[in-house]
Image (tube, rainbow, N blue to C red; front, side):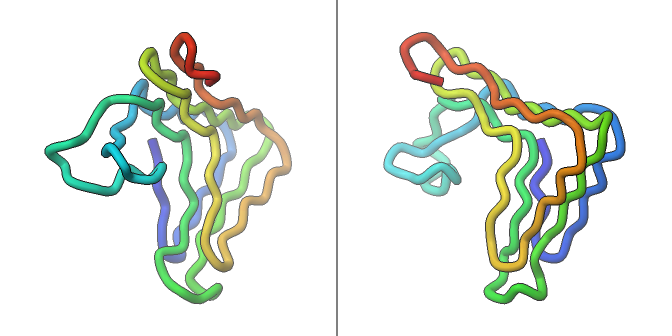
Length: 113
């Protein structure tokens, strides 16, 4: 649903963010779904929020703050695993969780998700 990169800030004061029902993954690619667009398959639920740092130093990290009343949900998938609620990665990227709720998406039958 949301992907913030390079010094971005997200303030979760209330409301709900939900990942897409299914995400796109290229065969042989990692979780990021990078690869040839012609080979994309619908397999996993989309992530709710991605906080990233697309650069190599901590000074460009992104920040997310979550308070009571905010809800983040991963997207569901009937074909594969559900999406993550919150993904935080990269140098200097921070999530401050003071409240709220977080839940991964539901996966399809037999996927373990």
